[in-house]
Amino acid sequence: MHFMRFKTKKSHLRGIYYMIEFLNVSKKYKSSQVMALNDFTAKIDKGEFVFVVGKSGAGKSTVLKLLIRETNVDKGKILVNDKDITRFRRRKIAVLRRNFGTVFQDFRLLTNKTVYENVAFAMEVLRASNRQIKKRVPEALELVGLADKMNQKPYQLSGGEQQRVAIARAIVNNPSLLLADEPTGNLDPETSKEIMNLFLNINITGTTVIVATHEKNIVDAMQKRVIHLDKGVLVSDVKQGGYNDDALLD
Ligand code: ADP
Image 1 (cartoon, rainbow, N blue to C red):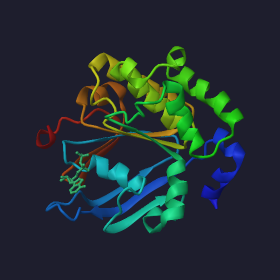
Image 2: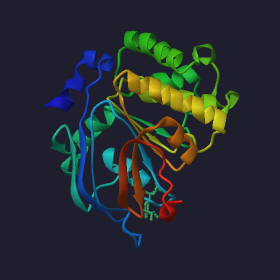
Image 3: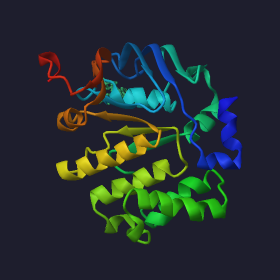
Image 4: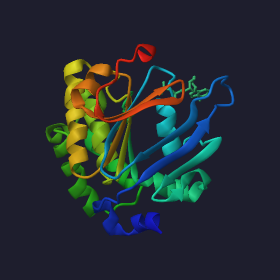
């Protein structure tokens, strides 16, 4: 059982790589008239860097929410290492989430805690040992370039720095998959570029990275895989490309 391996102490230090497959996934939220996803099929290999793009309401967040089981499908399957996570119940969902790091547009830091404490907290909830926390938190902060701001509180940091803390927190448990939902939505273009470079560095270490964004400039600059959604429908899936200036999609 792949997921159970995380329970061993050592697994805090080791990535477990996942194969992800969306198979004919359809989803409509109860209070909504439209399909959030409509017969969506895509396969993401371990170690890939993938953009999920499209206009607001295209279904990008839904793809991420389904992967962390914040919501579930109406139809179809989502396989993670050949296991259909749409059938998972609470305990297995919790284990699944532990192996995924998440980053959001609005950072979601704990405002009363320092930078160090914010990142350490992600390890504490997984019951990492003090020794592991003391070793790993500075490493993660070093990686995002914030080693010198460990004792600051979030309000003392710029938006870009706050997002770096959120990224350190997302990767501190060494997740196999990093999910980011509009991570540069609140940042200026220059800072956005830096954050994307950080994701690239994380990806190079073997972590699968999935970024949902509507920011064409970033996607065009990166030339990575682009999954393009429009009204919940997959319109293109390019191995290495830009945002795709289809007239229909802006
Ligand atoms: P995106 O991330 O591309 O902006 P979403 O996945 O958030 O798109 O939304 C896809 C569709 O599902 C939209 O029509 C949106 O209005 C709808 N939707 C998303 N979340 C909810 C929700 N919690 N309740 C009702 N409808 C929702």
